[in-house]
Length: 336
Ligand code: GLY
Image (cartoon, rainbow, N blue to C red; front, side):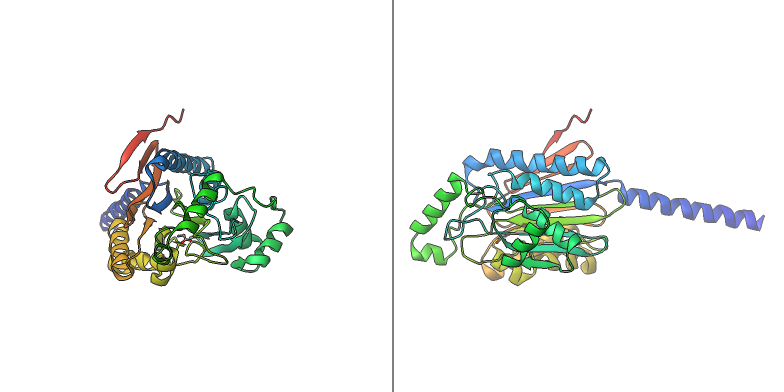
């Protein structure tokens, strides 16, 4: 009788653990996207929202078709690198000399492997070069001539000069050059915002993050997007983040790392941690940014101190999206 009672108690305890486990993971999988934070002009709103929603769907489909969280964040970012509404791949912001110099990074939260690249020229998908650095080199970060040689060696197509340069990027550079010295020094115009990023968590709780950007106008300038703990981070034990905004500030504040620490060690939600860190950063540096954050259970944080940030996520057949502060629109996707 005593043995039966113990068995019963054990089985109740085991059932509770299973239920807690299920309750905690019932929100998975999910793919969360941003398409850049900043002074997004009205004429760009429609294109950016369309692009982030498409990227969320592509990432989600990648997961549900058996791909990993890493595959999902790579595919989602690749779709935005093709879209001139974003500052990444085709349509990226130009250097002072009128070229695209891209930065990107990708991180696998399951084993903390990562690949980072900077000053990538004439390659359509810097995010895939970053993944290749992670998987096919003995290094974590390659830049400049080194990354170009590596990419060529791994079979990436090196496009003719000017292929990634759009009319709108040329116009933005022209406008930038015509700004007053004072405005330039105050970072008031560096081209259009639109760094892209993705964070995904699969049904088993594996997290991955990726970020890709053309950065800001400059030469040899590297922003936060390719820097782990600043613009990108993923750790299955902590969560995942991709940031966007003023890279010089984000890297000095180590933004991604601070948000994850607020979640892990102060018990904050993804939303509260994102808000707390971003507001403190903006107060200290008087510069703005935005983040997408995911915790280990698939709860999301979406926050920006910039004027606008395009974002979207897909969970089940629901796409949530927005761009202004307080937005949370929802559309049902027909998955049949
Ligand atoms: N956050 C993108 C950059 O500053 O390069």
